[in-house]
Image (tube, rainbow, N blue to C red; front, side, top):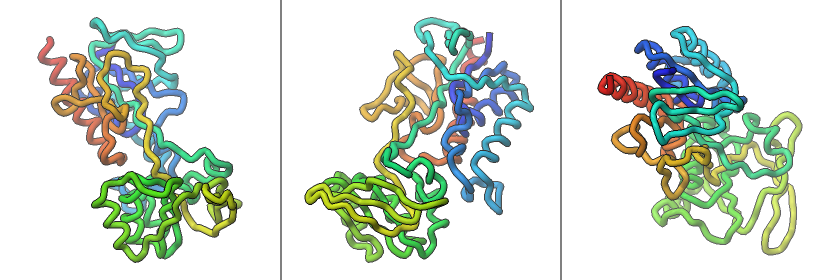
Length: 303
């Protein structure tokens, strides 16, 4: 019997584990086969406090894991299969094994929706990104593309203009779905240009992004364009599909009640699985801290 079972091992899950174990709560982390979250896919992280020279994403996650394990967190590298949240203690199934917990923290994060085109996946962290606040500084005085048509794409473009020489927003339709205020902002910015009715079909380059193949959806014409970076801003898919009974919103993110609580008493949530707004490692870690403190308080009150 565990005091708390944490599902997910990104910044939210591992920070929560550091707090719960230091509070002497017996803690199990369902880390997943691909433990560590989205930072395992990044290269240098320059905006996480405490690392003035920056730190590689996998190194940061390895440090967090060691810190959680140092205080006694048990971490298993297997995927969550299912959970029975209808009665207490909660039963969590991982493959052939079932674990029991007095409380649960869901910290499964959200996956970036990528373009799914040839050459893209190999270039993630080598010119392909999904986070301008994280990576914009690497593209100082360079030419970059933002793919998308919503508010998040407009925000990415605006952040990039502080560093890049030119920002081109590529959208597959002839109009944006972003709010009027965001559209007005990008249209007024002299650094931002637009290519509409177009899609990237290939990402080209040897070790990093060097150019793209782009197709005009109206004419069918395909041509190559030199570019230094691609920022994909077509949305995120929160990892919530397996949590039966937990309330989710219209975008698929877990609904939060009173800071970090879900609709089920004893089940808490932290990080990108509910946070569709910030999506930063440091905010995920902050939510992990909050969820752990709320869990500790809840367990204390129950006892």
